[in-house]
Length: 358
Image 1: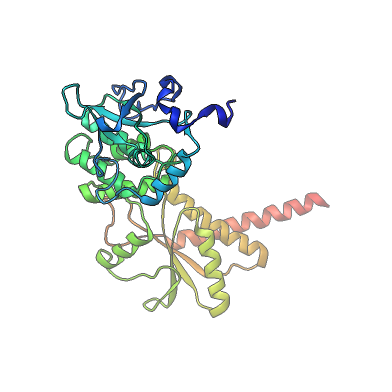
Image 2 (image 1 turned 90 degrees about the vertical axis):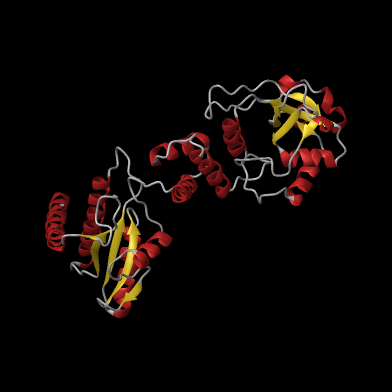
């Protein structure tokens, strides 16, 4: 393993670095036709640098002076040869300024501020559309870079959809986001996808819910009223909740606390998580019912009494073809019958286990 001394080159000797030492970025997830040669040393006088030239950032995402200052402090001890450098587009030998900076604006500005003559850059060969994706994913968090903002990614992908370079299909968009930003948290990619869908009028095959979206639907589409967050529902004289699959136990215990405090019951409306081949909408909806039944059984086994302080009310619409103005109501008789059956099974199992212990 190399020491810090082996990979740090003083600013005064940067031009003498063997370019093969720098690691090459891999943009095959963007396109296999992209070519990334070894970096070349380019003098800043031959480098066209537009402050808003990085298409991977939003138009108003200008250079950050504090980030540039941090970089200058870092570069003061030397250039790290184990880190990738910036990239340029070769505009041709006949161009007055041959190279156009495509990314590494903060680092370039920092080096210019330190009085450097020039620096190393990859002269990447790519189409304009490929450059958009390259610049976008290059801004993903890799110190000392700044984290790319979701709005910037949304703007890039919307531009490509409108230009016809990306198919207007929810599955295609989500797959592309995963290819381009594999290290970004899934929750972030989902928010980005939703932003793209809204700006391009893409209709999802499945609808996914957030707190903000639930409130909008209640105000704009739902034919009636329902409470959320444990608020009091005057219409039915109960507290109302919403929950996602896997989160029902938290709502269950909140409703129990409300019941212990006030003697009043609650209801909950539910929705599923992401639908996949192995976790279908139907499978997840059945799992929500089973989780509720299991919680009722657990309480009975502790207190020897089945107290219904929370009702499993309904399901939010998640298919474009189903109930858009209201909930898909759970069959209460069917659920109560299932609770009774599972309680009997649990009691019988407990008696059997006690018999074995004797």
